[in-house]
Length: 347
Image: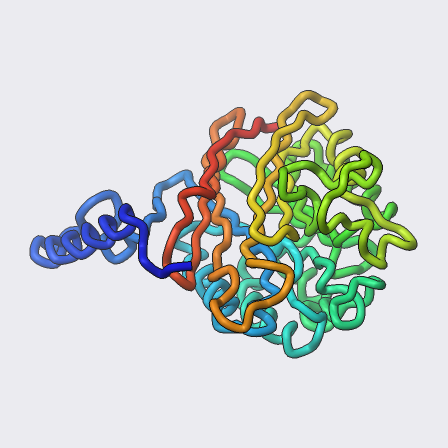
């Protein structure tokens, strides 16, 4: 991907320079925000954010500086962008090996004391060399549950597992419960997700997992007779106990009146959004993003160039306006083609 900035960003940079010069002369800031923070993000009372980090396996393997840039950007902007939760959508590593987990820890551990950090292991985070032939993972060794449990907003975990956790955070007007779910979740995990949502009906329910929507924005469904690349049932963990996206929706999301948002990754070069109703008739927005360029990590080019999703939330008494923005702290660039805006109702 070219590092040339889109026209609107070049204009923004130019205006930022002019604003800085005028501000220095007049002793005041110019525009809606001070020039030194005129980076394309709005800073306004009542607007807060959550950040989604999809599929970083190639950064952990070959480009640690990109993953560290993502983590550093989040840490530096926790306060001024009012970031209230961070979620990794899985495939934190490429091969489920210590050196790669160490890169991930350096990037995300500094956030744990400040905000909920919701980690959902992907297929590459499971099994020997990320093979997903079983559910063994080094996640717990680098993000111990005891450390996570002491973090702000931690609510509970499934059977003491760091890869299935539930978190609380508060908005300006509404409360939220965010559940991080393993790749190809087991039957008991799906039931646990259902029960956590049901136990907190007053909170807006958010679920993040790894494999949920395919490249066409359809939920993974191994029973529909349609071939879907990277279906969870293609992996060894599914030989014993697993569920795909449709089964997670049917078993945990649709039955709960407070379920509103589902986030996932897993699909190279993927970006998709769909809306369905839960059984109470409320819209459930489901979003998938993955910026890796293919199924193998390229040795040149930086792979996905560090793009993540910064979701801006703005509440009123009855709903939450969600603005999805794709941004790379590595390139300091946006992807306008991956921008969305929608509303979800409060329970």
